[in-house]
Image (cartoon, rainbow, N blue to C red):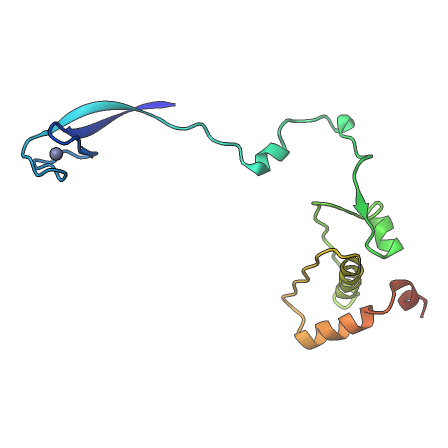
Length: 149
Ligand SMILES: [Zn+2]
């Protein structure tokens, strides 16, 4: 989109300024600044990598969900609830009453995924380091055996 803009250019040295000045800051010449109208062109907005992912609208029936790769959480029950496991790039919100075992399940999932060589970042704003270590120690046992006992 083009926009007209006033600039002041020194006739002696070519110094360019957005404001008029009696003495050129470039060469020190007096009354050498002359107004010129310039057409400034804004560069087109570059699409970011985020927008390119959602490049065009798609009908729901046209979305192919068959090729979605799912990663097992290590828990058959959680995999079943998630529709077969975790989808890369997706976000899952685990909710429930306090003490219901959200942290324990997530620590088990973290342990399982870490064991598969995947990078896991476990962030907690509530538990103390000691609580986390206690949960982690409990989750070191295989999930199936833990639920069986
Ligand atoms: Zn000048």
